[in-house]
Length: 178
Image (tube, rainbow, N blue to C red; front, side, top):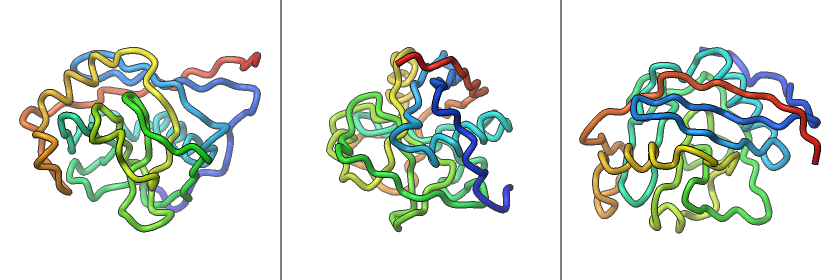
């Protein structure tokens, strides 16, 4: 694991996209460095290091979220450092939102993230940093979600009925002309 959070190395003139290859298809995610620079920086760093490769979606709750990013697959693992919360003024979750999971305490995010897949996820309290949105391949995310447990049984570590994995995450960097 890592001893400390990576130094901020994002380029403000660059648009960052993550291409997440899963066992059921590709998921394309637009990252929001302007809203959550430390969270995006950490995610980009870890993805480039191969940290997420071969990890599973350890918490999958139909109509709520799919969660991954834990190298141990238990819901308790992380990169060895924490990142600060970065809450924009409008911290609203919608289907496809990518947010940083945390322990429930302030500034306790690390590597675990979730993607909102249903109405229970849309009603989350604004306690999780939003740092991206799925812009392609949401059908793959829904496929993973359908193999989860029901939303009415949501609790801490909810092992999915079928284990799905992240094969790799590739970061694409393109000039930002906006």
